[in-house]
Image (cartoon, rainbow, N blue to C red; front, side, top):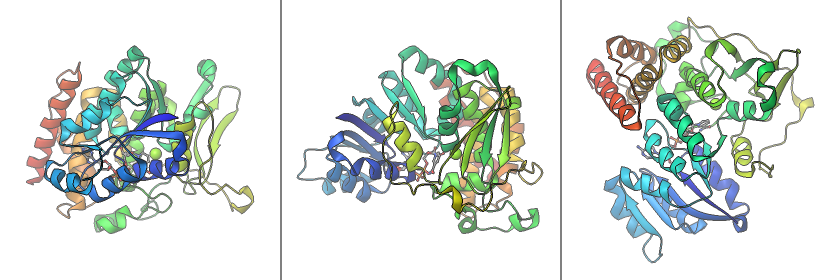
Length: 382
Ligand code: NAD
Ligand code: MG
């Protein structure tokens, strides 16, 4: 039996993880589950998986969660500290799938324990990649990426042949507005932006995919995970979402990872690693494909890619500010306070107006993140 915890079990990645483990409950001993507002689902998951510790980030939801779990002996906690407490519970394998920089402290708490970390929460690496990766090394943590592109690179990167890598080919679907004009994007609604053509995901990452900030965040994520800079990472728009990324070698070989677009594949890979386990993903039938296409993204239409690459070049403080401004701007767009094109414009404005103190420890990251959020809210008058 493998003991496991899921941070963010009520989200899109969390639910897919629960789906996989529920198919073979005898193989997993569920330690901790966490969520935020959806305590009904959290309680349902906790009961059906027989979890030991459950936490909601929302203190207002404590009583509701407690009463939903009355009559069980599941420990119930609430608040940001409770999420970190959940991360500290001893589990061999932990899925980090909270959305945004809110995942940073819980992920650090998982790393402290020195076991296996399945990392979906890319914002953690965007804001604190240097600190996180050195802690992972120091604590001897096994890190398995869950983001589909990074799982693909992890699987096709021959570790003893790193010197023979020519470049990383990071694929992107291009999102719902790939073929739309800037004029069109000016007027799009949150409903249009979250309707991703190939993947079913949480609202924030869906908007990030539509602006292509998601690919910008993923360039930074790949830099921290694999050590290749933005100049060695080629973003390719591949609307079919079948090739999840590839590694090109100096001898002309390109090792690509393919599969139907379903996050249960990279989640199952992370759960089974170093072995492979069954996943309910529909098997890929190559004869059903009518063609695979790859083009370079249009950075005029999708400036987020340029903004993210610049931030990566400038250093960790810039990527923290970029991420924080993006989180607030995406929230404002989803709440209909700003237009779609204002998201990346806001991020650029915040980067222009920010100061960039050096960050050495997690607390420094939290401070820069908090300041950048306040500045973004001020700029947007929200
Ligand atoms: P989601 O919005 O569906 O779920 C987020 C989870 O985090 C929920 O359980 C929610 O309760 C919890 N949460 C939200 N705010 C919180 C807070 N302040 N404190 C503690 N918990 C909080 O998001 P998602 O689509 O599942 O994405 C999760 C992470 O995985 C993101 O970092 C995303 O970039 C990454 N990711 C997602 C996908 C995908 O297909 N959904 C693919 C690759 C990577
Ligand atoms: Mg991805």
